[in-house]
Amino acid sequence: MTDLFAYKVLTREQWTAFREEGTFTGAPVDLADGYIHLSAREQLMETVARHFTGQDDLVLAMIDLPALGDTVKWEPSRGGALFPHVYGPIPMSAVTTKATLRLGADGSHVFPAGF
Image (cartoon, rainbow, N blue to C red; front, side, top):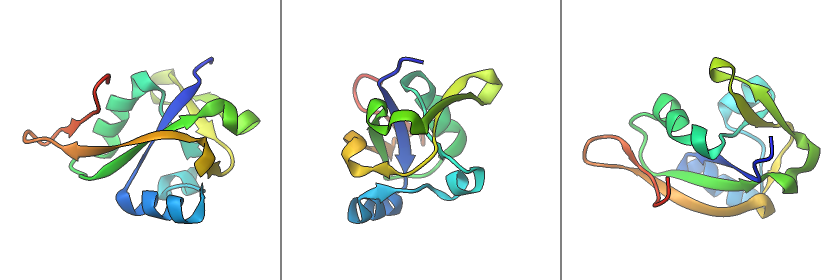
């Protein structure tokens, strides 16, 4: 894959710890699977709908994949689609931007403009 960026959805607590520690080593699901799950832009809405329903005040971190070098592997997951998985910690320096995902009045997540 040639995507330059991918996205990690974090709880507010995970984001705060990431900022304080300077690296992110994974959410519980990442630690259990042995790699950090990311989503490409076109996969993000489905990822949030499947795994974060009803969770408010999430942080969407845009990750610079080239900054992670060969720790990024594109591997089949949901329905055979290739997802970016990171085998190692993500340094805060690889986060290019972040946005807050809030729940709208209908209970679905409100994404930043452009999604």
